[in-house]
Length: 337
Ligand code: TYM
Figure 1 (cartoon, rainbow, N blue to C red):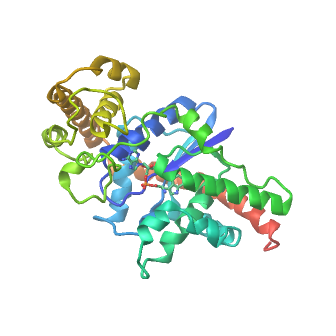
Figure 2 (figure 1 turned 180 degrees about the horizontal axis):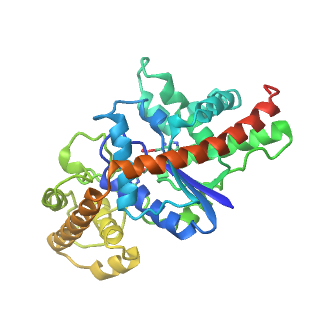
């Protein structure tokens, strides 16, 4: 069976961007492939502590898993949820891969460059982040790692590390994850990879942006979310067209509408193409987002913490078993065992 694996950090309440760009597509993939694949959905809590956490990390993690369940994830014998720090093999393999990866390739990571810009005091975890991520992926022989495009470079790094490792020891110890173009095909969401900031649509919608109206949080009151859509930045062209470069604000709204209403993007584009009233489009998207949030929040309220803890206990048993077996193979290759 192939393995599909992904994770979302729980540094705060998630945004609509995380939900539409990562969480919901993963839930759909998991439900589709749970008969023919192992599905691992984990909380990268050790990745969370490279930066500040809003609120209590443990509670945030439980809330994120509730989001998955509210979005329709069905946990069963092939679908597992677990927390990274409850599986110590992740950090152990990270160190070993640190001795395989090079400073050159790790320094080239765009996220590292952006986050460390001009900061001598930036923590080493920010630099090491993609190596831990490679460990998260390679421990489980994951072939597919559904992620947004901001993370593609990290998948390529994991591939390079896996290939170098296998070559060095002359054995297929790690499964090399699929290349990003194949990942995108597999996800089937090539159009919906990046939800933009509502006020600044050249940028992605991000939890860390300060301006409230730039992002929709999953716990926003539905009316408040609708107002944010109504105040979204558009352009002065005056004609609706899907063109992420020329009209990023309008294109973002079309994309959100498609994902929130589960309609193919091409259909949404065709419905609105050539129309001139931006206000009408905003009104429709505002309604769709507020309806979606109302339903999502009421499903969320029905899920209790005890259920999540029970699922995590099973998931962490499974994860430790698989991860420890792989770690032992790696330790043997290096003659540590
Ligand atoms: P994180 O928490 O930064 O991002 C989680 C996922 O959300 C996607 N994303 C978005 N997608 C669309 N539009 C947006 N505005 C938007 N904002 C965020 C990200 O692309 C990502 O898919 N490094 C990972 C966590 C991780 C991981 C792993 C994932 C650690 N180890 C191993 C997979 C496998 C991350 O970026 O999390």
